Length: 321
Ligand code: GLN
Image (cartoon, rainbow, N blue to C red; front, side):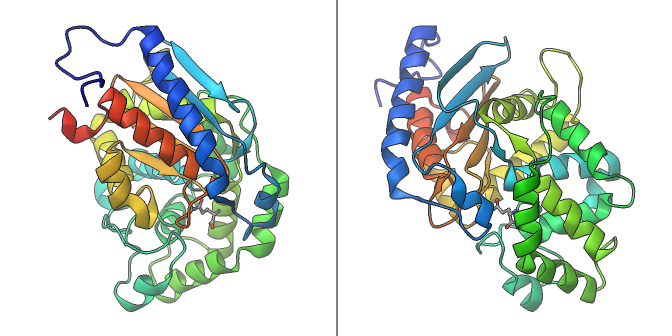
């Protein structure tokens, strides 16, 4: 560990040193990509290039470092859950939001229905499908897709985010498990809006097209206490940021969250489109794109790259207590 940039090191890494660490993270990620598999349960996602990988770092001064495939657009998928939660906290508040969804890691896969049926009336947390769908139902009567896409554009500092129609149609045609979840929530009497309207909005939010830079910007806002450092706009209240980061840390990688927490230790959120957002200290946002996934549904290249970055840059949250 003596070649890490320790907190107590007199000087911060130079831009060149930082660049070299990111270059190596990119190389390791690229090397790991063939070990994973592109998601195919949403047929449109199967068209992604399994070898693709990109990494984009954006800091609070507007400095960036990027390698690889950072301009390709892909569907945000479960990274949208972070935005959905941020909107719910902003417009419904903490108490109301968490009277409709819990804040416990589920230990199950992202689309599991088991514990929701057997153990609880409320979904375990907003970072799994059931919890995100439930959270969307809190918003669906007040906000339409265009409003929510507007929030995503703002949080990701990306006016070019649009609906990826092909992915949306593919999800819509094959999303029966998510329909099962929404109707189960309805049958339990906890869903807060019409089930078809809710699940359709959820499909659309998963189909927002982003790139690695959009996710880096989202990570930067979260890492910067909810403030966009370039406009000064405080989009997310500081105590809501704390909640979002906590849930990203404990639940953001589904049933791999514990391992990611130990090995990487940075609040992050992945999606089956291959995207990952990480909110690292600095402030620093890291956006990654690698559509080859591990068995849990996380980008295998992104996980590998983040392990390297965390070790070399001392990013683990418990390294700087
Ligand atoms: N749209 C996907 C689904 O609902 C999102 C899942 C994910 O990214 N893990 O299955």
